[in-house]
Length: 109
View 1 (spheres, rainbow, N blue to C red):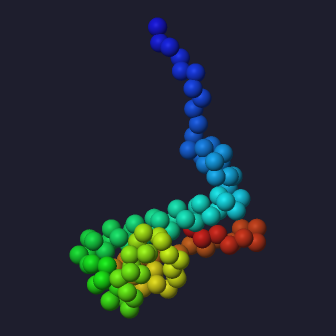
View 2: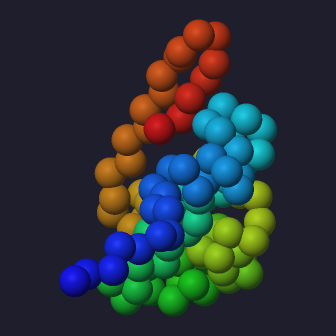
């Protein structure tokens, strides 16, 4: 006979709601933004490597120091959208920015 587990199961969303806060709260919004920035940094790193570029070479192509590229890839620095767009242009990537206005809020997706 199978023993039934007495442990309660939670979804990832339930855990995030409990530990970080519900969607729309300042703490949860900050978490979601940070997550998106991490993903952008990782995408830049992966694409740069596929294009056989070093951080220094990529920096030279867009006019910034190697350290700036490193910070962007590891999300340790605030960076401008202009810099990100320059990077993706050099990496030959199409960028689509979607902005939805909902109930007087600006949401970047």
